[in-house]
Image (cartoon, rainbow over all chains, first blue to last red; front, side, top):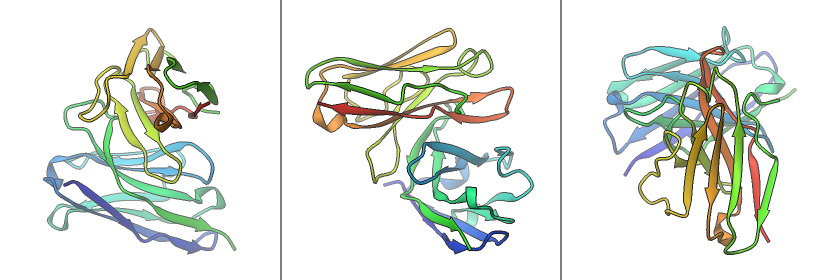
Length: 120
Length: 110
């Protein structure tokens, strides 16, 4: 069974940092592209970043220069380092697996999310 | 303001057919395939339709997808109370070099 378990969220002051983790199991992690998608309270979905199985990385403009996505295939874990956090980064952050051999906006498994709150 | 435009709400009675639209441009839907996600409030999104019209395993055939030009649509026939949820479309945008989501459509089953 595919499982994605996010952790690392919490309350942080503006300008602070957080590192999110997503522990994956039930599939060959190294073979899949992985992504982070966030959802502000009461709002829609927003793509944050993706890292391919081969290590190619993309970021949404909202996180460029502040967020860093990475993966540890030996630990089957996805990470998102978030620096210089702003109030508008407050959201539930989902880890999602990209569909294999399909379009890059296809995410077939999602975690339950970890909540990041940026507030003083 | 989302790059992909969806109606904020839709509704129907049990058994009816409803359609949710997703309007984009040549840099996204006009070039790349669309995926649809269903999100029941308080839960994670679920992939409902991939590559415009492919239903993942377990998704009832009451759900269907289509695409034409720079727009896509999700149709739900034989509406059921359990279909009450938020629906999001998504596509790659070649100008923004990123994945974009529609703003979402809240479906109410009356």
